[in-house]
Image 1 (cartoon, rainbow, N blue to C red):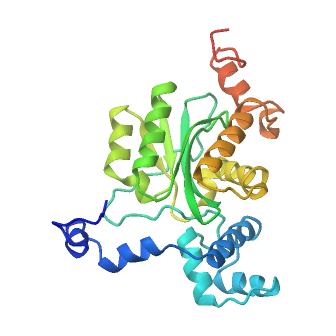
Image 2: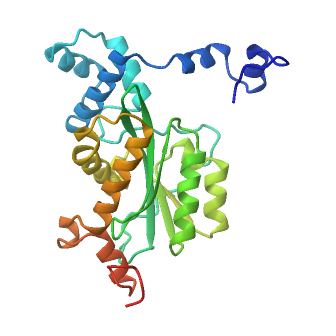
Image 3: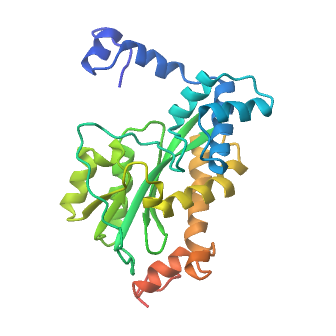
Length: 279
């Protein structure tokens, strides 16, 4: 949003957008190659050891031969949105002025597609930087209904994914997310309310409340993201898209009696699992 302009100085543009000028220069500078490598290692390690805080992560990386301090690791973990103790990668931070909705799924029997949808955000490393990925999932069938990549945590890419899912599939009864600002902001809440969808949010710090999409992230990272050193966003989008397509259509799922999510989603809806058409 900020550009070189003869009429408006960078200082004035930052003032109009209500951000410190130092923030603009910090964003432009980005992370160096060494820090990006550390971020990838931290992300991979955290998938296996979600109980690691900054001190344990620092010690682990030192054992691997990296000369790092706790201050650096704490900053990078914060940038990645990783908190120890519970497994949830906290990429979406709460907004103090946004309304928090109650968790509606406790003791609820989820027995059909489009009864409950869920969404979450995760970090995706690429060469020279990183992206954020949001996905919309049907809780019952585990089918990924839509997804988007973004180079920032602005809420707009989440809303775009939501609008795509709502335009392509029947409206769900309940939508569950964490309490991140992307999911408590006006545009997201308004889209759900206009579609008359009940809003559910995880309890604070309870990664298990949205466990199925957490498992999706784990599978995606080990079976795709960590296998490739994505050159750029274009390659990441292509390979992640291919993985999600295979996940939906071909990948047997142990929790679904060995069939892919598409089979469960369409068959339970009275449609042909091969093409989504009426059986």
